[in-house]
Amino acid sequence: MSTNRKEDEVRWLTAEEEQAWRAFRRMVIAVQTRTVQDLAAHGLSEPDYEVLSTLSERPEGTSTLHEQAAKMGWSRSRLSRHATRMEARDLIRRAPDPADGRGCLLVLTETGWDTLRQAAPTHLDSVRRHFVDRLEPEELAALGRIAEKIADEQ
Image (tube, rainbow, N blue to C red; front, side, top):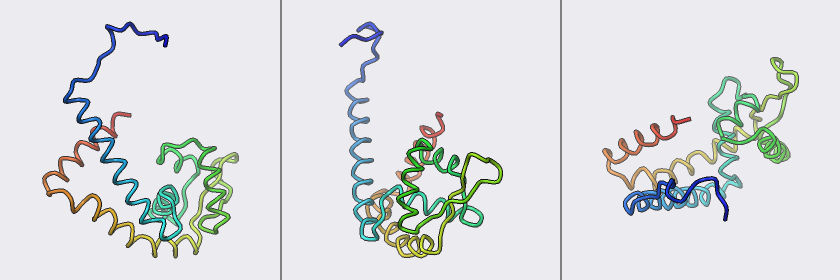
């Protein structure tokens, strides 16, 4: 494999760094897998829940497609395709964005609100069971600080 970096320029991970990285990856995958399985009981995927819960926190249950895509770290086209699937299930609807003639608003429907109200207790229980309750308060606080530090890099 050809690269632009010389072998001696690569900053290889130390054994401790690699162990931490692999443990982090295992943790993320384990928590996501378990919480996604619990959401599936309501016919929702993790992105479905993210869209519904985010819209529920916004005035009038509305957000621009652009804002929602940025929050999720998705492209607008990827979210648009996902929104089409959610629209087909009457969880959200699209509306023209008066501030951007090319954009659209995502709006939480009554079905979406009802679905979120039914799924939220399951999701919160799942987050507690697979994440929060497995940590001591000081571990949770430290992890919160670490997560903010890494997330704020962008």
